[in-house]
Amino acid sequence: MSLDQRAAVSPDLTRKRPSILGYLERESVLGWVLVAPTLVVLLGLVAYPFLMALWMSLTNRVIAQPGEFIGLRNFEELLRSQIFRQTVTNSFVYTFAGLPIKLVGGIGVALALNRQFQGLRIVRAALLLPWIVPAVLITLAWLWMFDASLGVFNWVLLRLGIVRQGIPWLADPALAMASLVLVNSWRAIPFWAITILAGLQTIPQELYEAAVIDGAGPVGKFRYVTLPLIMPVLGVVLLLSIIWTFADFQTVYALTGGGPANSTHLFATLSFQTALVIGKLGQGAAISLFLFPVFVIVVILQLRSLRKD
Image 1: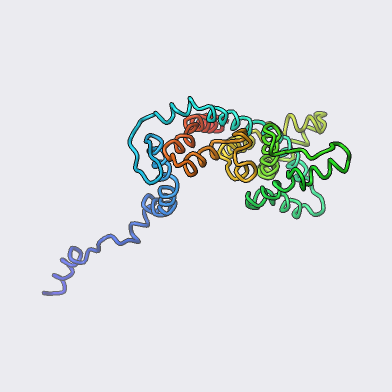
Image 2 (image 1 turned 90 degrees about the vertical axis):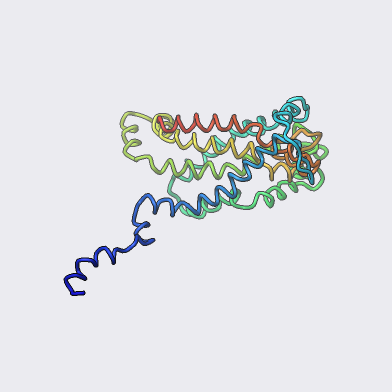
């Protein structure tokens, strides 16, 4: 075969198949490749457990037995349960009683840290300690402080002569819930403060200067400049705080275990007791998923509101 004949047929014979690098040069393919590890993690650690819990909530499954499909019977039994109704009340009290403390404390700390002073970085780093330290360790410290005989709170009150005997902080139903709200709020304030601080630092200083020219004082600047511009941040923090507080387990389980007399049970602690202590896995899954439709609606409304803003 001559060189001219080889040149004529070589394009068809030597045409290369698309290589892997050629596929990766396409933006659509490269995008799926980059997000594939995240999708695998989400499917394995989030989607699969959620679907399994959803299926178990529709069965009468117990430990060591597969169970049978019973539809919504678990949810019907929960609505007739006095302990579960008390748990619903406890969860709402625990979640919303601490919101004013978190809101005022978070905004106050954020405004304080938004100023320039010596040691600012050290203070900001120290502020995060309650949030980043494992919840169990912090809860054990609070458990000691709430102790009726050796706790620091009762020691101070006794030394000041305010009380004559130690207060049973975690043995009285009302005081136990108040103590839980205090601990949860104390631990959440750093998250609120750091998030709000990030929003404060995006506000242009020219707006404050214009407000001063218009005669606004510190209260006026906060009301007409600061507060409106951090509302989107407050909305996100509020939503996350509500979801995390409703799902809280470690604080309540370590301090009270749901007692005394089921007065501090939340969805997570009651689900744990029902599923893993009593052994009713189906009913425990139903407890954990009871408010899931409500959370979905709240998240959708919040996201639509943020997108509209």
